[in-house]
Amino acid sequence: MSARSETADPGKVSDDFVTIVEVGPRDGLQNERQIIPLEVKLSLIHRLNRTGLKVIELTGFVHPLWVPQLADAEKFMQGFKRQEDIRYPVLVPNLIGLERALSVGADEIAVFTAASEPFNQKNINCSIDESIARFKPVLDAAKSRGMRVRGYVSCALGCPFQGSVPVADVVQVATRLADIGCDEISLGDTIGVGTPLHAKRMLAAVSSEIEIQRLAVHFHNTYGQALANILACLELGVRTVDASVGGLGGCPYAPGASGNVPSEDVVYMLRGMGLETGIDLEALVDAGRFISDALGRTNASSVGRAFKSDKKLGSKHGYQIG
Ligand code: HMG
Ligand code: MG
Image 1 (cartoon, rainbow, N blue to C red):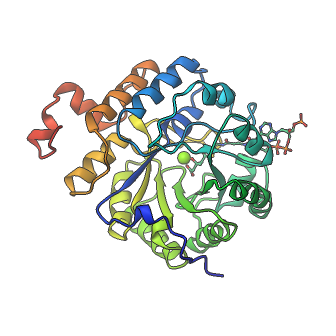
Image 2 (image 1 turned 30 degrees about the vertical axis):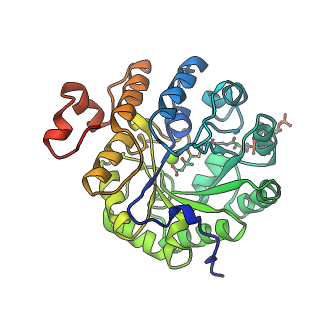
C-alpha cells in the first residue's frame, strides 16, 4: 500500500532550505563509554540552542542498561532550557519509553526499527514485525496528544550482521512506518558503508512510495562517504538531513560504525551550494569544538578543524562568514 498522503509538512516545501536535524546529543553521545557529566550535556545544548538549528534530538528513553549513557534522560529533560523556535524530539522504543518521555514534558518523539532482522534483534530485541506492532500504540498515544513522530529505518544501506540489505526491504519498512502515522521517515546508513549511487537508488525507491518531503537522510561516516551520499540525495530533492556536531556518534549495537556526518561539514557544503539552513556556522563550530574538547578527542569535523587553524579559511575559499 502506498504511504503517499497530503500530510507532508508545509514548512518543508521551500526547495532552497534544508532542515538539519542535529542528532549529536542523542546519537552522538549514546556510544560514549565514559559517562558524560550532565553539566557537559546541558552545556552542549546551550551552545546548540544559539546556532540557529531548528531541530535538536535530545536524548533517548531507552532501557538504561542497554544504553547507560542515556540513563540520565529524565534529568537531562528537566535541566535543559527549551527555546520556542526549536523542536526537540526524543528517541522512544516502546510505550514505557513514551510514558517516561511524557512525564518530563517531551512533545515530539522518534521511534526506530531497521530494514535488517538481525540488526533489529540486537538493537531492540525484537523482529521488524514486532517492532511495528510495538510502535502502533505509541503512535496512537502520541497522535492523540498532537505530537509529531519521526520513524527511523536503520541499515538502509547495509547491515553489520547480514551484509547487503535489499532496497525493497528498506521501502517496505519505511512504508510501514509511514502507514502507522510517522510524519517523517529518516533513512539511516547506520554503519556508514553506503556510496552515492546506492544512496540515490535507495532514496529513489523509497520516494516512489513516500513523498520526498517526508523523508530524511541519516548517514554515518565510517567510510567517508556521508557528504557525497547527502549530495546525491539532495539532487533527488531530499531537504532534511541528520547530522551530528563534531561528527560524534555511533550505535552501541552496530559494531565498527563511526560517527554521523559532521553538522559543520554539511552546513558548509550547503552554503556553498546556495542552500540555506538558518545556521550560524561559527556558532556550530564552537559547539563542535566544545564537545570534542570535553570528550578529549580530535574534532571529527574537517570544517571545525579548518576553522580552528584559520578562522578565515572558509571565506577565502568561498564561504562567507557572518
Ligand atoms: P527488552 O529487554 O526486550 O524489553 O528491551 P522488555 O519489554 O522485555 O522489558 C524488559 C524490562 O525492561 C522490563 O523491566 C521493562 O519494564 C523494562 P522489568 O520488568 O524486567 O523490571 N523496559 C524499560 N525500562 C526503561 N525504559 C524503557 C523500557 N522498556 C522496557 N523504554 C528495549 C527492549 C527496546 C527496551 C531495549 O532493547 C532497548 O532499550 N534498546 C535500545 C537500543 C538503542 O538505544 N540503540 C541505539 C539507538 S538506535 C540508533 O542509534 C540508530 C539510529 O541512529 C539510526 C541509524 O543510525 O540507523 C536511530
Ligand atoms: Mg544513527
